[in-house]
Image (tube, rainbow, N blue to C red; front, side, top):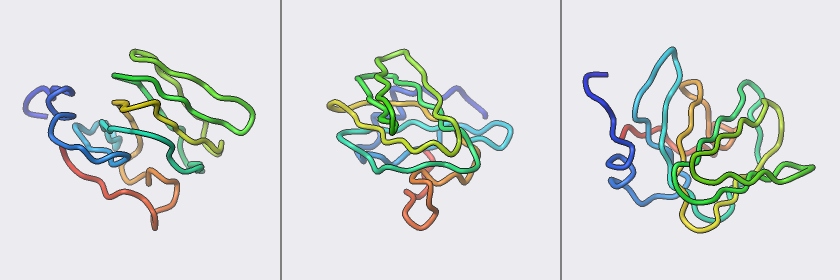
Length: 117
């Protein structure tokens, strides 16, 4: 990384929902920001945990047995292999950390392409 990444500025460069933008990488992990609105698909990641940090808004992470509600500044990790569905109440901004190449839907065929912010 040659310069700091300003997350607010990076988020201001796009309007797509559920389409993460990579702002940095470290140890073969992508650090990404995304905008969410409404429900996403039920999915799971067999090979990795799923890290969510809410930067702005309120995000429900539905699990098959409960719902976890995250507000700005709160973090939650969905363990690998656990089905979940993020549901954004209004527009939500999040930071994600995942191993490079992890499909956001849990399936490479339906995943959003990785885009640099």
